[in-house]
Length: 130
Image (cartoon, rainbow, N blue to C red; front, side):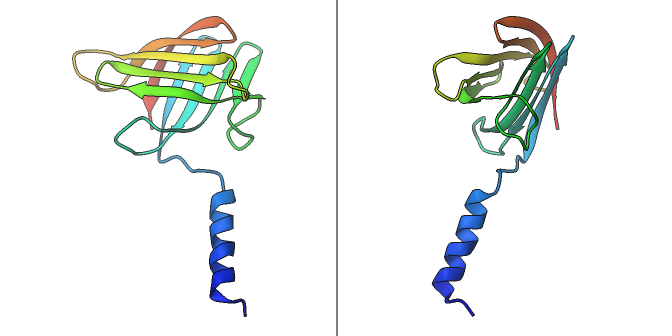
């Protein structure tokens, strides 16, 4: 039997190595474009992973999310008017995906409408939550 400290270290290392599971998400689609964004359930917008495709371009935060070139979250912000998210290349040099959404209607509720810019090509999108 392993000592208690060894068990704790093993459990901690397995927990930290596992992919983060989202507790919510945003699904966006438009003509020849879509994005799946995994979110955490915090008082602020917390992005835990994403996958996006438009035309021939595809990006992903990891293979568990889908295929494509790697990208990472650059910044994310949400308020009662909408949601703004930017994903950048792994070197944090260029924005490769930008999503700007606004709530439809008078109150902050789904669906959201907006624009997804992937590889400098703009796409109109409509988004919902799961």
